[in-house]
Image 1 (tube, rainbow, N blue to C red):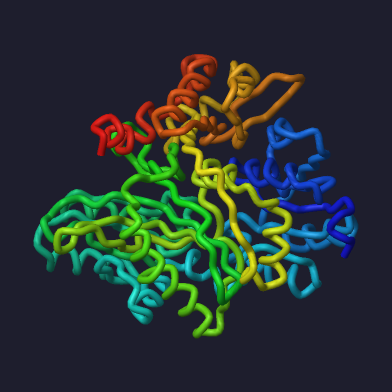
Image 2: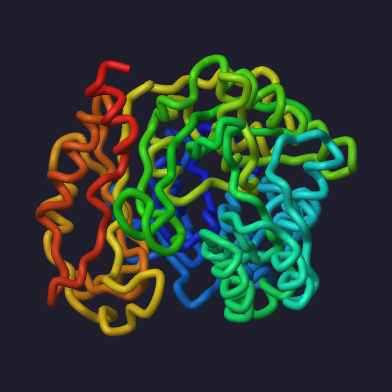
Length: 452
């Protein structure tokens, strides 16, 4: 490998807004000369003058082709940021070739790509989580629901389903219908979980948060936290999506609750994986719920992810002052014990610009022109990251469900949100086909306005 002070080549394995954020951050490193993204997207080049090469014809699971790129291009570091690449064993293959790699092995990554295994792992290590059962077929699910008093449930595909495999049900009748819907996830939904909604002991609803840590298998460092908004419509109505926006810092995470998150969840997960012979190296994501117990807030696990979240990375990673290449090399080499993370402590809000119809049928939006992106990204304190967009002759066209992300920064969530929505107001799609939530960060906006 070349010396760190010479021009290094980094490969980012991702094609969406998460990958665009990583490309942007690696491009800021003094050690990085060029970046390759697999498959990448057309807007990954907009935030840097450094060369960015994309391979849109490949998939994140194109292991032989990625290995060939690494050998041909003399790649110095690979950041595996996509869940299905972890499940496919890309990290294992790269490591076997001696390529410094950020990301967990397939075995360690099972904490994400197999929800049934993950819940059983949580039971073994005393990690707080909701009541669940694992169903091997629909009839098992129907029989269980029929035996229970009427209540809300979540029906979850056990395997990867592009962030859309968790279906809420308000009562038993809806739960039966949601179980039938597992068929649309094909292999991912053949095994599924039935989970109780997380509620406080006073019956109150919980509040979601996300926590991110770097881990070398034994040691971990908390990077930051965010609050995702997964439902497609305002005030958490409608279907679950891959994420319609988020904010940082989430004010629900008090110092006391954060201590419980580290001691009761993160510590147990990292130590448990190591004890089971699956040391976890890379970014570990905790999707948590703060619920009220005995008058105070306690954490419970919704899910773990074996990589950065999308769109949480768009608000957490920009706050990292450290050189990302240096941090990633320490992770790849398996020792972050001496790493001192520095964050800028700014508030950030990201809003997802999506095709109307997402996460359902949005095929009529494909190919329609998007206006205003260049104007939006020139606004002070705003960053733009691309996802499902094609660029031709300087024009932008919709090609996916989640199209782009606009991030605003400020001293508070209120300041950051004002910048984000100011930039979003100049963007449109032919035929009024742009959909985005107008309430991202609403809980913390309410807290700040009330002075809480």
